[in-house]
Length: 261
Length: 322
Image (cartoon, rainbow over all chains, first blue to last red; front, side):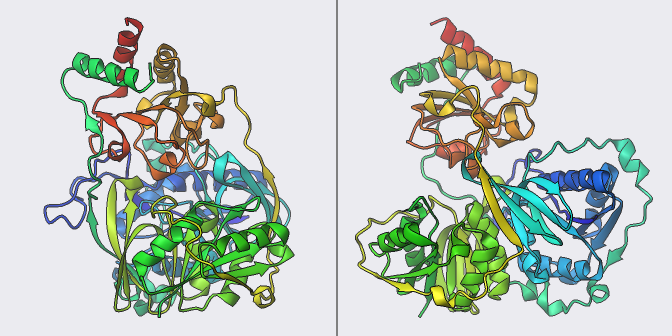
């Protein structure tokens, strides 16, 4: 089975405290730590496990700049066979539709049985997989937390409300967005990354993909981020301050009053 | 005139709460817009929901087809493309169905797409301004959406004020005949119900709920000890279950359990909306997190900026000494 996994380099929510820049319209990006989108690691792990069972290849792909190459190498160190970087100044400022269109152009050049994405990334939209499937006119399922590979079709479980699981049979090829918890992504050490450090990763630009630059980037975007801000949420929590003993004393009084003790 | 269509999710013949929230969202998009509810399904449940919706919406479109008996997004999408005008605004809840349906629908309708909207700030020309969040709720953003060729948008449940039913006396329009070919390569099989765990966190008045801040599996014991001192039960957020440190039945959130405790101790939980979506009944929320900017502090009643691994044992000791 030929599997393509779409990945993204994102600011690491576990490693950063996000603050606005001095102009107050963008994140202060100077010291941000970036990593692979958490959901994508689960997608790559799932792809590797499928290929281990039924044979085939795992290719990881991303749309980004030179720095995005590092996330491809990380996923190749996990066990993905190939990497593809789609990079062009014209891609900058693309909305979800633009990114999906860029990916679709490359997918059409290959022959993939299964395309995986993370269920969502840093922007929290969860849009690329569904758009890609619609563009390729193949079936789609989101929030997948179980995959059982059969002959010509697969059984997938989707995580739905209340911890229940919705089981579907889907014809191949298809696009699935992968939810966290579907597996336990393997650890990647420095050594693993060194091993793939010199593997060639092809870089493809708009012209290589036959993409009209007016349909991507800022020019093609119908949905544009105007600014970042921290919402005024009113009072918020009453913050307890002082020494730990003082805080605990105040907290215990409140807990008693509210039925917590 | 702006035309807005809102998809009504329902279960067992009852519409989900978001059905009462779309009218407020629509008003914030354009107060003069027409608003139509769209209900898809089959049989008596569908008829009941369509009829219920006439108390909220002036127009209700019903699409009845055996293929739609279960809301399989790949099938529902095909029907909607044939029925919703391509330059309209289409709203659906940002839940597991909406996320499945909407991105592909925007491509098929050649419309703009925006996900998980928490607020609208009106239309200027052909640009709709909306608010959404990024990075797990750490920051908010304004987005400008070009609606000149329509828009498909998911709205976050609970973000728009619910209206009172009875505000309308609408009529049901049966569009079942326009649904078109509904064959799809994705077939719904069954729902596998969540496994019942060793404890029922929904029955406890006090929950000590842990998130990423617990750092290591061994540290869960620290939370257990606090829970014992408080006569409470340990629950958790999603990352703890993903790491297989606790059973799925202990997870609070839209993809886990919905709890209604009196007191909710959010220990090292950042407070994503998916997590908070499982905390109902307006409990007294105590948040302890070493990140002063954690979104949980916006919704908690009491906040403490400390490392839970140091704070919880001190609190346990103080409670045991009472």
